[in-house]
Image 1 (tube, one colour):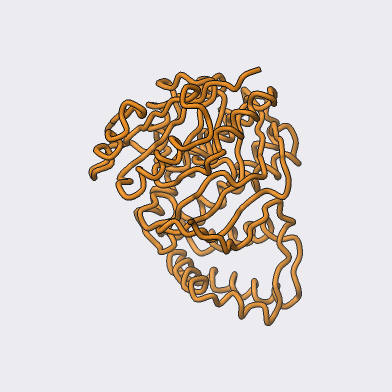
Image 2 (tube, rainbow, N blue to C red):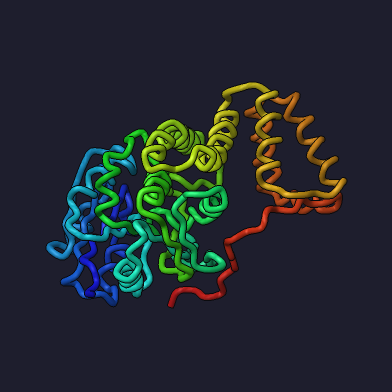
Length: 358
């Protein structure tokens, strides 16, 4: 059986510094140009992004729209794709040259998967590699059991936009996605696709994921605008994902596992933004600690009790501001003097990379 025809869907917004590298990484794939198409959805950029994309016409098709966020870009682009497989790429990332060949071959030989992800390189703004993130082995998942639900929570980072590819037959059953998902639409899409068609995770790092100041989702420094955008999008997942998983016969206890961590993130962000009361902080921090750790020393229990004591008396926004200060200065290392918690066993291997780009 031949390899399937692949649509590459690049979503972009104000990526004039990076979009050319993203497109070139697709054009230079070791994959026949006759077996793929490239569609760039520009989500209302106000910089030179559209001008740069047009340099690649007719090899690349540009679809412009008003700014509406990630889900709206997917909703505009997916129906325009002709491929049996749709591979997603953010306009500020780029692919390794074998990405499409590996993904297309996997879909051609593994007929029981509807969505596919893989490992990644984390790179800085200049493209220098910082870390290699890969799963400890190949995985498959259909969200049919508690074990698979817990695995999926750890592995979902390998199903983010620039790592994500899916069968068109699965995606057309899902669109339109909720347009309140200004960010995090990839998490919503990957979770529903796994329920509908099964997910596969490959070990190879095939994507370079760029960390930079203009990223709409990641923020190393506190940014209330980005935090509010993430809060609203996670709240949408919490509200709209369960009704989409139930028709796919996902068990109720699996749905609860998948959404509990989202609920904790939503509540933490809401508290950091000034919503709620100190007793809400205590409750959610106790729950987050139980979810993240499996055991701890007596010293750590004393430390955590002190943290909860501070949470009980401080306004939530101030508590989380102090927590960010504590984390930014690396003070967690001093906590090891009294003891550290034991994290849950991880399926993810993250190593520092010493290999810079040529």
